[in-house]
Image (tube, rainbow over the protein chains, first blue to last red):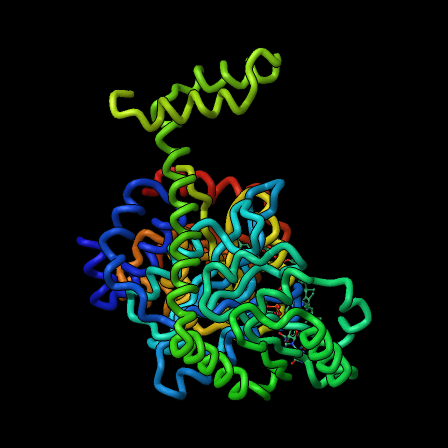
Length: 316
Length: 134
Ligand code: B12
Ligand SMILES: Nc1nc2c(ncn2[C@@H]2O[C@H](COP(=O)(O)OP(=O)(O)OP(=O)(O)O)[C@@H](O)[C@H]2O)c(=O)[nH]1
Ligand SMILES: [Mg+2]
């Protein structure tokens, strides 16, 4: 069976198997993605990030339900961390997405970060491309519970939603220069708790102190009680407005260029490493490592040598 | 196979006994598996849909409510309807030996574990059965 064609025909099992394939990586995965590339570029890709337990999954489910009512189809990728010790993972985001069950206009996939540190997995961008090709209008990506460094989502999404919660207020100055900078929308979730208004004020103050945004979009600060579906319509509308803004201001092309450059760099790194490993025997590899450890060879020279081998046409 | 084993742990039926499911989820995670946990009160339809989307190698069902003789055969039937014959299904909880035998012989559940079942045995069973997967 042709996996790419089955996926385009709307076969959900084929989509699921294609997702496994791109997660595993390798030449077959790349040829699948090549075959589907022309069918991508339609979906609105939205990243949702924030601290562990901030309500990312609950908000993603509520946004998905909103867009379903508006007649749009929704794909979801939910990333959770892999244990660095066992390589295992517990992926629990679906627990909060049960209300979407049984809807053929929704497809949810959990993904382990598999050692990647940026808040998403190596293959998250590829997975988004598959959902895009499979004709989902909106693709929501939930990152792992993020602190400050997990900002890679901004390079993978058109619109990035950052979730804060009341009480984060006290240390708000110290937090997340990085994570606030990537926000196209700020949501103070759990607004049923004390201090939400204060957190909103602090976030707005921080935004007004910051340099005027380079792309001319000032992130709105919105409140939500995701658990009860409150504030969802305003968030969804703001996300749509952000996409319109990107398109009308010509920034969309800029974002697409950033996304393409980011992806190309990742693919290049991965392919180069794979070619080198294919042409260099494990014993040769070990020997180079031993030389580096013995300080008879520096790692930069070793890398140059390997790259020449890996990229030369004659090698084999 | 260099890809991690993917397992869906789900609780069919209406009971809230989730300790066993969580113990198993953690044991499988610690053995290097990727475990999707979907929580309590799942219908067979919900479980099969999640297993399909997640493309899991294994479904682990935890059931302590006594409703296993209706829910588990229904679930196996739905799996067959979706062509998911290759998914390994194991179950645990409060299931009598007689029921366990019927579930295995007539409905295609691979193994059934009761209270006190050592988690390392469950891990080993899943690993062995998944060695030959494609
Ligand atoms: C703790 C407990 C509770 C706790 C549950 C807390 C929780 N969040 O889990 C509380 C107090 C809430 C509770 C409530 C009730 N309980 Co209760 N409860 C128990 C008890 C004492 C222990 C269960 C437990 O947690 N064991 C520890 C875990 C680790 O063991 P386990 O679940 O058996 O899991 C092991 C194996 O079964 C297997 N396994 C389990 N799942 C899976 C899944 C997979 C994939 C695999 C491979 C293996 C596997 O591996 C595990 C490790 O060895 C049992 C009696 C017993 N001895 O089993 C009764 C028991 C399960 N409860 C029972 C009942 C009737 C109830 C109530 C209806 C009581 C009432 N009348 O109110 C309520 C129902 C509540 C509800 N909403 O569903 C009955 C069920 C009877 C039946 N099915 O025929 C039992 C058997 C007691 C009895 N002898 O009557 N209960
Ligand atoms: N009080 C309150 N609780 C909420 C709200 N939204 C979500 N929660 C609860 O917060 C907890 C965490 O919610 P999740 O949606 O799982 O949060 P998350 O950010 O996805 O968590 P991780 O994926 O583990 O990082 C759950 O118990 C939710 O029910 C809200 O608006 N108000
Ligand atoms: Mg979550």
